[in-house]
Length: 246
Image 1: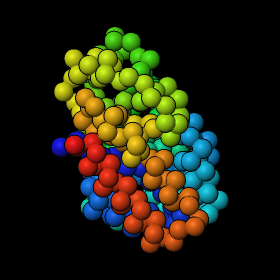
Image 2: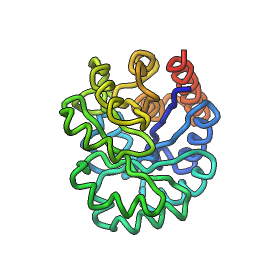
Image 3: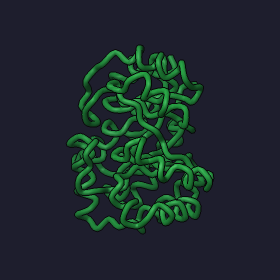
């Protein structure tokens, strides 16, 4: 069974909604939740997630809100924090490790922390029983892929193309998937540009997909009530989970 990872921007449109949405996604078949840490300059994210980030910050998002939501969500679904390195740097990795352990969160996804620099933090994260997810891009050489995947645990985040999330470009990933699989048994999940229309194609040869913008678009739709948003994201999750497993 191929896995579905879903991304939500913490605190948008509200903290209570984030908790309700996480639980609704779990019921719809989502296996792992990425709780996004709102940041003012989310460099890897496209306009959809960037907008949700800014709106969450404008409505008063604080780190404590992430911890509060996580404590309610993580007991029910495998949860990771997805955030940029800036807050980890300022607060210290030990601080986030402690908070993750307290709330039941299983690890971190930090897209602007390169593999080489992550080496300084990985041992302490893994000693705490947590995971730091590694990224592979289509532009990575075989040598670099072998180096990265030899230390990868939980899953490998395969970036579907060089660019930002939600852009929906297509790229033949089979050669790079074959390169990764030659060096590791760690599951490979593909992200960036995955939605109801692309999921089946993107899931070829990999072990799961990561979906963000497709859900956040619904959260940004002001014509929908919170209840309608929950129904819609659950339906999208269910459809994607079915398509990747056909």
